[in-house]
Image 1: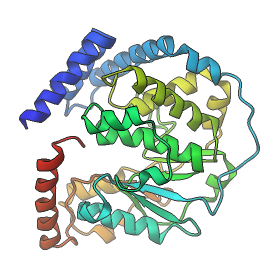
Image 2: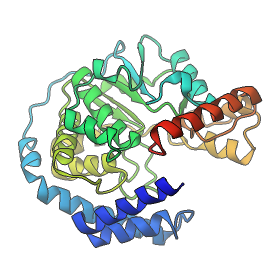
Image 3: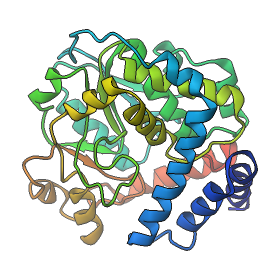
Length: 329
């Protein structure tokens, strides 16, 4: 707990001195006083300090933006045989029971897609990530969530394919609409709740063709940012960078606007489970709207059909992990 508090204070200090007091104050308010609020005030604060962060990044890394301003797009589409990438730093064997359940659902509904399970021991076989980023992961400047933002952009740019967070529970195979696009994501349209992405994307589910310029821009911006910076500017940096691409590039904006609305009820299963105390999982799955097949859960959830022994074993592994790595996820 003490180490976690130190890391949070270090983050605010870095935001204040290296980027903008406005960002530090906004982040502080939204992660403390307004943490459990969903009101308009929190929305406006988040929108304000993320807009400020966009201005800082767009100005400081203008050279990266200019390099990707004019790109040639091909007619390549997402393929039925593309790999699905799932990442859990510690390894799937040490993942919470709910994560294993989600991964089973993805495998069940993968169709012709091969499911690649990645962790700290094998991710480098599929993605080339600079040593200076790995060094910052090892010394704690980049936590595992931030690292996963970088990793998913590298994986999709270098290989093409589909990134799904291991907290996603699938109830059927991918919609055919995905295979008509070069870039695809969940587009739910709930802009009132998501002031950064405005409901146009959800970075826990991304699919793209190999060498897709949108993933290339994101990858290069992450590389350049972490080459120069010691602190992250905002936690949802992947949404921040994607928002910059949407604002700056006509080709990126068209790519995202061409995606049809899908999986609008991606949070319903999680909300029903939380309300129901984790009971009747399978029954609740059938109550989710038919337009939704990717359901976003959380690794902290308890569900009834996971045994007491499984949960107890995970808790024991989690304590051991924290002793070794600290609270960095």
